[in-house]
Image (cartoon, rainbow, N blue to C red; front, side, top):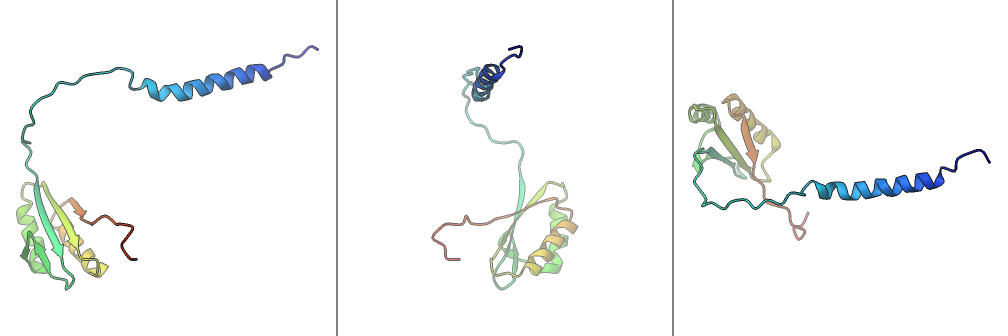
Length: 128
């Protein structure tokens, strides 16, 4: 027999590969560090947020103050003078998408780059 039997070699290599795959993630946190504890401080960066809500009737409110859709863009431009305004959109689930899309376009035309949708988490007991 002039050939080398590679089966034991493959078995050993697979065992080594398995060992490295299992231990590699454990080695990432190998250094234990006790971080210093400090008293919490107030953030120097003050976020400028605006809460925009659209109720079931389509009424738009900016920070709980009713506002006309036409005046929304000008008001947001004025409040975004520093360029760091963030808008949180809270739309009733019955509001048509067209109205929400129109409000989003007003927000974008006002120069606001950061806006998010606020939603309630879905629970398994809610009827669908």
